[in-house]
Amino acid sequence: MAKAGFRLALLATLLALVVVLLGAYTRLTHAGLGCPDWPGCYGFISVPKTEAQLAHAELHFPDAPVEADKGWSEMTHRYFAGTLGLLIALLAARAWRQRHLPDQPLKLPLFILLVVIAQAAFGMWTVTLKLWPQVVTGHLLGGFATLSLLFLLTLRLSGVLPALAVPRRLQRWASAGLMLAILQIALGGWVSSNYAAVACVDVPTCHGQWWPEADFANGFHLTQHIGPNYLGGQLDSEARTAIHLTHRLGAMLLTGVLLGLAWQLRKVGMSRLAGLLLVALAHNAGGAALLLTLVLVNYHARAVLVRARAPRFSRWTYSLKGEQPWRP
Image (cartoon, rainbow, N blue to C red):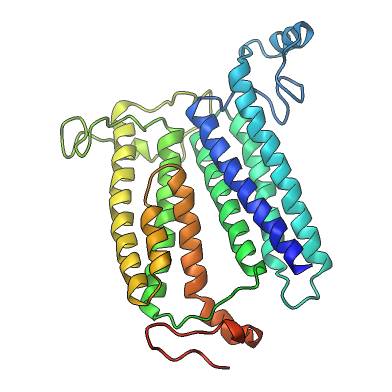
């Protein structure tokens, strides 16, 4: 039964990664409003294609002509997200039924179910509020949160929880790296939702200057009004430049912290994790890999604390670089 739960959680994690990547593809192809309604598409469960369906779409959505490619991009994302929601509901139901078992997490699967319900609401608001940047960014963060929490659940259900002799400074580096990665993902979402990715087309300068004109007040004006339509963005050039610059500065800070974390991992003999961390410094899809790697690092860095509460895992206890293993 434990193996079945682990496999289900692993499948959900892989599917969540696909959903995150499909969401990014939908965004990059400007298909966020490929279907102007939710959860269907022009009132149907798929993109309209027959003459009657197209006539219905034109009658009820005159301001949103059917673009089949964008519509299918959006609906494919929704199909996968819906399947993921069903898997998460199954994980939560299974956890509730087996809550009496000592190795069965309960709070985490139930919390993931709440997160994915909130994600469905954000998916609806993304469409109904016409790509309002605050909602789009929140939807992105929710997707990464779902992926990370499912990965954490998979690790817990794997039954492999080594109690490592981890220095306190490594835990601090791991926590800082995770927090900065979340912040940088949020900044990346804000860049994307405000169409600021090409606000600076040259590197390392921006518009040929090290510090160009930038409007940070409007770039990060989080209480901006809703509507009418944010496809293509509503901010001026200087506001988008401010967003882009902040994202660059955040990337530099995060890179420095990750290099320090990788060095700390190598010092305690965790060279494999250090290598994964450095590989995950790549951009875009690497953002998800980086977040999962940091979840893994934090999972290992705190394993000794969990080990103190669960002596049944003593067979996984081992030492690093000559340090004495933890004993119950």
